[in-house]
Amino acid sequence: MEKHVVVIYPHPDDESFGAAGTIAKFRDQGVPVTYLCGTLGEMGRNMGNPTFANRETLPEIRKQELINACNVLDMELRMLGYRDKTLEYEDRNEVAQHIKGILEELEPSLVITHYPEHAVHPDHNALGAAAIEAVRLIDEEKRPTVWAQAITNTQLEDLGVPQIINDVRDNFDKKMEAILCHQSQANGVIRSWNQSDDLSNDLKEEAMKRLSIESFYIWKF
Ligand SMILES: [Zn+2]
Image 1 (cartoon, protein in one colour):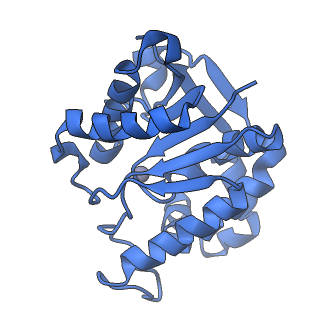
Image 2 (image 1 turned 90 degrees about the vertical axis):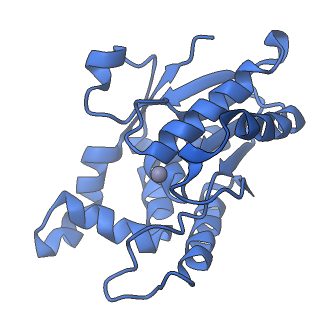
Image 3 (image 1 turned 120 degrees about the vertical axis):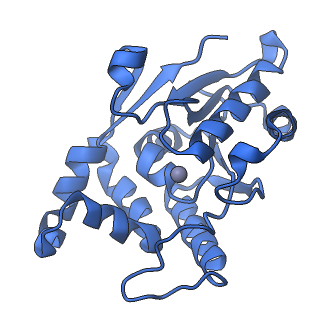
């Protein structure tokens, strides 16, 4: 059983879409989980339909959505305080040192992050690389395991079959509840799945089809 799990992603909602079922499973086992969220996603283009946010209010709205999702998932939240869409320009070693300091305090047995170069978005790739570098800098005997999440369509060809494949249909209600906390994002994402207007009836079914498997590669140092 894990001692403490630390999840490291750049945006409010990455945790819910990507790993909420896995997080819920750890919490059911009584394992503490902490989310280190890189940014407030303040550069997001989605302001809602009808519009409910502007550039000034979006960070506060997304922060509150994130707090709500973390409450649903019953995990601790720490903000890393970086700016959205600029993580790739941050000094990777500085970010790694920042994260390493927090990991040394929390002493997790497992770190979950994005698989660098296989995570679609530049912020995902950059923070995943910095998180893995942070873990690499920790003495081998104290070093947590890393589960790296690839989200490209070509991950099977590029990386092979993931070692960790979590079917999260059992906790899907919780995952859906966490996703729907991110009101400013969820509608846009869900709408992009299907242009049809009465998707809402099958929303959970559609989400289940797309999001019920959470898979990770065990990072080899
Ligand atoms: Zn993201």
